Each structure stands twice: as structure tokens, then as C-alpha cells.
Image (cartoon, rainbow, N blue to C red; front, side, top):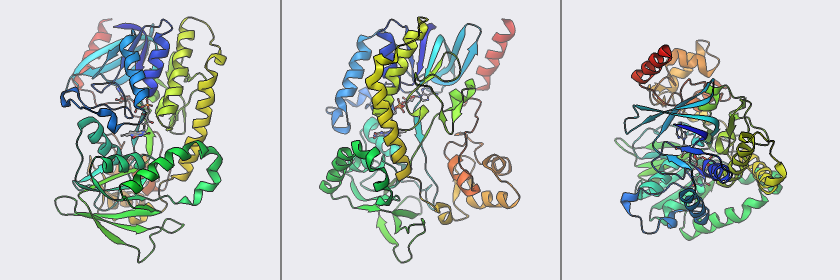
Length: 456
Ligand SMILES: Cc1cc2nc3c(=O)[nH]c(=O)nc-3n(C[C@H](O)[C@H](O)[C@H](O)COP(=O)(O)OP(=O)(O)OC[C@H]3O[C@@H](n4cnc5c(N)ncnc54)[C@H](O)[C@@H]3O)c2cc1C
């Protein structure tokens, strides 16, 4: 199909952009891998589950209703269950390549004059002994089970790691009837005073979560970490311990918490594969954009977590700005930023608080000390921390060389899970991975492309 604008990602950023652009006469195709729009924050239960009160599991329900009803009333064409593996520049614009169907094998293409990358982010989980046991899930995964499947991962949970996502996960599980034995946060309150100004707007939200934790009697263990998950066939409990100011376990503070579920997360990383494939400039690990949310590749915009992790409200503001900018640029005019000044002010404020949250919730220092040699680091290729360390002694100085020597990062997820862990063990910061495709692509689909190109 041919359209003016292809938006990839139907989360808050993609929805806001689609509505803003369509309202200004742009033909929009909104492409998403999920069966329903909403993205991570507004993830909806499958229609077949007939949820009677889905709003009970959500924050900012009214925002979702506005987006959902706006989409239904708009001319935006929603292309659900389209898994985009690549966006390509062509002589007459941009081509979005997707795979359809449950097996993701049927190819589909969208030809567009402009593309907005609103692909969101994904969770980081750092390894520790026992983290591959059944019963250990990611914090966002536990929340996705609850919001999307209306199920809880188990009757007794510990929520652990670091970052603001742990708060809605712990309170959401507790409200759904899970006994949350503890929220274990490795960050301490020590860094907060330095960021009071930037975080002032977040305090009411934080107070709300604190009240909910109290109401559900969830113990909050700040500056603590899970040092080991226990169990033979599945999780039976975890050992938690207090951390000192240098991120080392304080001797004698270890204690055992029985649980059948550990929901764990250590922050988020942006999805940048499609942007990298297009040759967009990155700023560290995020897609670099200007004040209009334009990347440095003509015709390509980016908004939401792909340009920096900062929450659903920031994604909405960025999407709105991108949609208005795209509408003006496609008409061949320069947009007037004054028309989106309130959104730009909100964006600046929320980016400041996102940077402050990043500083407060840095992953625990010295976490690698607690990763035993037999701990699996790369789950796809079953590479242990010992094998990674051996590669380092052989002279590997970066994650790429470790990958070549051990196969860590060569499996199905292409290093999305193990990348930060391997970088941490190698003592270097995480770097963009440069994956040629955002998704695994059947060879038949690639061969078909080649044949078509040969004939044209
Ligand atoms: C697992 C998880 C749980 C979260 N829970 C919370 C929470 O409880 N509270 C909170 O404040 N924040 C939460 N966040 C953060 C929150 O999701 C974001 O702040 C917000 O949703 C970002 O909006 P976005 O539009 O940038 O991306 P998202 O909402 O993540 O939307 C991105 C969309 O892009 C689609 N997509 C990505 N890649 C492709 C591709 N290659 N092809 C097709 N479609 C693609 C995805 O299916 C998704 O629908 C969570 C994040 C994650 C990863």
C-alpha cells in the first residue's frame, strides 16, 4: 500500500503523532506488531477475555479513552500484527517491510513519503545466580501478564531490581491479590536531594505509590539487592541483602524470602534497530532528534522511548510535536513551533525529570561481583559468566569480541537481553548493537525481495 506517513508503533507516541497528522489531512498508516493499539503503557486485555473493569489495572485511563476514541473516529489506517523488520530508503520515499501472521512469515510492504519511528523501549535485566529459574520473570513481563492476560504470575512475589517501573508493578500485583513479600530496590535515597528540583513534579506520583505500598503492607527495601534465586525445578525463594555505599553486599545482612515469583528489572533501553538500519545518527543509545523530532535522515522522524526513556506522558508530547511537524513538512512548509509551545515546554520539563530519574536509579554498582562463573548470561546460546570471563582473559576488550569468542548475543534475541550484562562483565558501557534487521526474517522472504529487485 502507499501512504503519506507510516507510523511504526501504536503506543502513546505513535498514537499521538498519528492523530495530530491525520487531523491535518495527512494519510496515515499506523503499523504495530501487537494485535491491539496502546503500546506498553496502555496495553489492553484481549477482547476474548471480556474484562469487565479493565480500567482497574490502568493509570491515566481517560488519556487512553481519548486516544482510542480519537483513533476510531480518525482516518488513520491501523495495520495490527505487522512485525516491521526493516525500513528502506527508495527512489520515491521509504518502504516499510513487515511480516504478518502468527508465524511472522508472510511479507507486507508499506510505501510512504515519511516515516515516524515510535517503537518504544525494552527492559534490561542483569543476571544473578538463579535468574533463569522458572518463576523469575521481568517486571514488565509480570505487568503484561496482568494487563494483557488478566493473570498473575504466582501467589507470592518479590519485585526487585531498580527503576520507577518497579512501583506500578509491585502495587499492581498487590492490588490484584498477589502477596508481595518485598519491593527490593538497589538505589538508595542518597542521590535524591541533588535532583529535588527536577523531580518536584514526580513527588505526588511517588507519594501515591508509597501510600499504596503501605495499604497493601508491601515492605520497601531500599539499597538492597537479590543476591540469589533458589529452587531446583522452579523458584522457591530469594536471598536479599543490603548494599553499602559502594554497591557491595553488607556482610551479615542476607536473609531469605520465600516466594514463587520474582519480578525483576534494571531499567529500560530504547529500540533503535530500525533507525540504525536507516543510518540515523544516535546520541549514545538513543535516536538523535531535533526540536521537531526529526532524525538526520530526510523523511524520518522519531518520538517516544526510542529517543530516550522518559514515560508515557513524554512520549505523548513528543508524538504530538512529531505529528504536527510531519503534517507541515509534507505540505512543503516550515512548521511554526509556537503552535506546539505547551507540548514543547512539557517535553523539556519531562526530559529533565527523566535525566534525574536516570541518575537516581543507576544499576547497582559492583553487580558483576555477585555473578558466579556458572551463571548463564546469554540465555539464547547458553553462555555462562565464566565463559565471558575466559574470553576477557584471552584478550577480548569489548562486547563484540566477547561475542565472536563465545557466541554471547548471537541467538534469537540478538543480544537484547545479554548485551548490557556482557558489557558490564567486560567493563565497558553498553553500545548500540548494529543489527541489520529488527526481527528474524525467513530466508524465503529475503530471497523473494532479491528476485523482485532483479526483475525491476
Ligand atoms: C514491559 C514494559 C512495561 C512498562 N510498564 C509501564 C508502567 O506500568 N508505567 C509506566 O509509566 N511506564 C511503563 N513502561 C514504560 C512505558 O511503556 C513508556 O513510558 C511508554 O509506553 C512509551 O511509549 P512509546 O509510545 O514510546 O512506546 P511503547 O508504548 O513501548 O509502544 C511501542 C510500540 O511499538 C511497537 N513496536 C516496536 N517495535 C516494532 C516493530 N519492529 N514492528 C512493529 N511494531 C513495533 C510495539 O509493539 C509497541 O506497541 C513500560 C515499558 C515496558 C517495556
